[in-house]
Image (cartoon, rainbow, N blue to C red; front, top):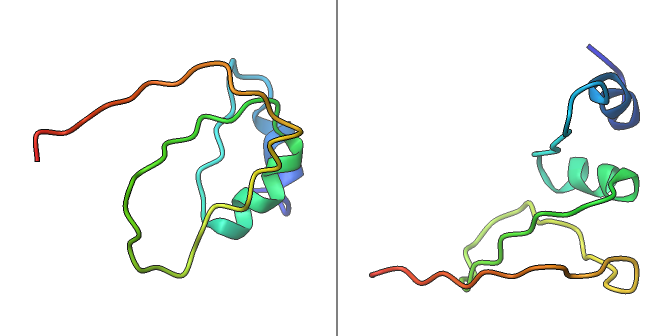
Length: 72
């Protein structure tokens, strides 16, 4: 057990990859510590009270994109 997102990432850093999956606040704390984002964009606007923080696209570069359609 650790007391911060930074310590959690440092503790897990011995693995090949560290993923942060959490609510909006956890993601906002972890975003400046990351070196890669895997983002899924969904073309919906569901109601909710937790959102991923805004991504400053001047700090990140898109390297790949896949478009997937559902049969619905």
